[in-house]
Image (cartoon, rainbow, N blue to C red):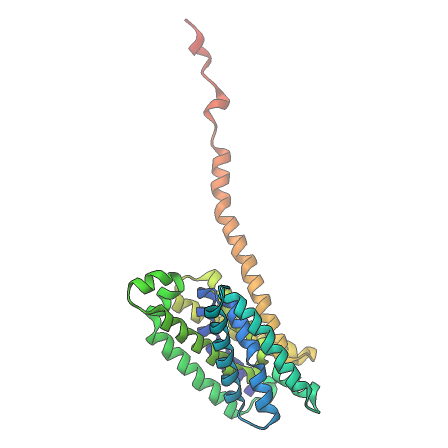
Length: 287
């Protein structure tokens, strides 16, 4: 349980940093597609005893290249390429996995992970990825922040938004690849979007948002593991469910606070007497 908790916290760090950029840039669909798109590489590597991280990296590179190819060779939007590659890569991964004798077990581990079976080597690899993503976010902070809010301004300032976008894709891919061992390729998206989305409701500055996302994610890991232990449910899925529940809880509190701020203004307006209601003084009409 302690190792699972440590693995979950490290995953939260790397996904909170990368996920904040995903939320700020409005790239949730691409993040989801990438999380699923690494499945073929993972299944091939898993079935043939190859390095899983290398397999996932190759699959992610193929998917990104395919998205760019569709976008450049057609007049269709980038979302079309993302959708096509999303479905195609996911289907290919399931087809490859179905050829294995232990199809159900292999696919379940790849899709949903097993946080209780994470090794010390897995945690170290995820920690290295977290350091890489953190350092890259610090070094590339200015171009990434301008890109997130105004791509045209980034180009006008000579920040080469194309390169910044490519670097952001690499950061997202690193976060996904580093996290799948613990939470699987399907549930990593919940970590990539859930805590940063919750943080975006309560804070404005990006660095503060990353820290808040880590806090929300850490709470999700602890509560999710405890619930999983006592209820006998799958650890990664329970944690992912808690992070989603956190968002809606924060959203409810956010709406209540906003309603409270508006209520005093409305009360004062209602309490102020209207000049028309009282009309003119009675003595005004006397000559």
